[in-house]
Length: 470
Ligand code: 6PG
Image 1 (cartoon, rainbow, N blue to C red):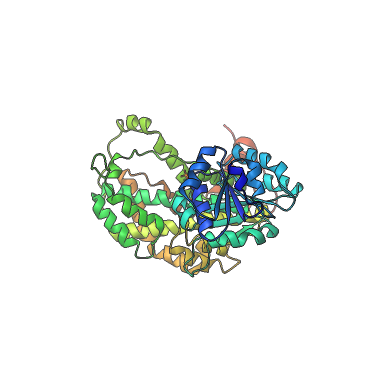
Image 2 (image 1 turned 90 degrees about the vertical axis):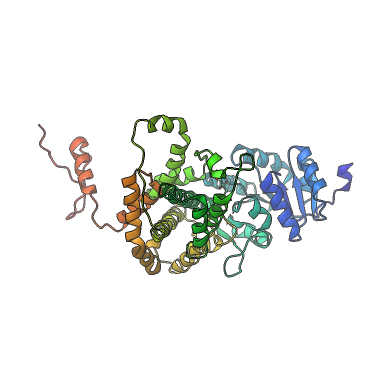
């Protein structure tokens, strides 16, 4: 009965996977006038979705075969399934139904190496594959996300008009959607977006922790965050923090933050970014620190037990400018580390990612959208810029706030308040601007105990010393 009403080849794209993100993306495409076919392995979900949204531009299919036959050529199929094995099985099931030149778009949070592998194997079969990072959560998917595409120019020509029209807008009004480079580049950029998201959230939570110890009420904190959101710290995460701080739990009437457990989970993108930084040898301390902080948070029982063996942290005195400046300086270092990793990965994988374009598409729709990203985009117009901290404007901003930043980190350390985000950002900054680090001693120690040899300041080559041993 359902199959009789299919309009063969009429639909411009298909969405496979109707989780919240898939549903909202379908509604977004349809609202922009794209005829969108939808499919979900569980029939009920498709049935429920199309009966709830009687949109002339949306059509449900109840088998993969029907779904594929709804699509005009080249077919554009957007996968919105859970990253990992589910993506591979969906592709395997679809392949016999596809023809040369069709395009599969994986719009989930896939691991970039999987995307590289899939691009390569599908291109051998004549299928174009695009790995697209989409940020903005459920609301972004529906109203306008930030879109980071990794694909060939050939695929991009077909899908760019579709994706650009559903994206959010940057400060200058242009779409927050762009092609980052080939194969895994889009998912890599999304992974780095998430790594910056982790650092940003970690930094804000540290400021929140310090304010708790300084005796601020939630309402005072909310006022301060709201105020910051009118200035140079303006960002989505600062904005939602003020709203969270004012929210009451509907069941108990208590502040919502008092009933939420202090344990933060993760789905893996931050971890992948930390792993990639280690693989590529890029010193981005705060990415790892933010991931480790979530691990520490989830060891709740152990922490509760351990806390009985140590004196409580003491009260801390801070002023609001100091909090602002420390957060702002750390935030610049968060961007610096994210883009540093991105540049090195782009060089290593030969992706040719333009950091200015990345900073542009992160200005709207995504979780880390922030006013500061306009300065980051300006900085990366200088194509030779190796590190964001070398941009004169951004460096000056950090230097001006350095004293407050150091004082806050010292005060937190004195009070026994953990600040891994802020202090790792500070160590990154100090390390980057130190011409001679104490690694000469590390070289000597390695040579002493393992004859690993060392390099010298005055000659090329590897050297070994016969050390005196007792
Ligand atoms: C986004 C987000 C999103 C991510 C969540 C949760 O850009 O819309 O980054 O993709 O899934 O933020 O990530 P974690 O569970 O790893 O914190």
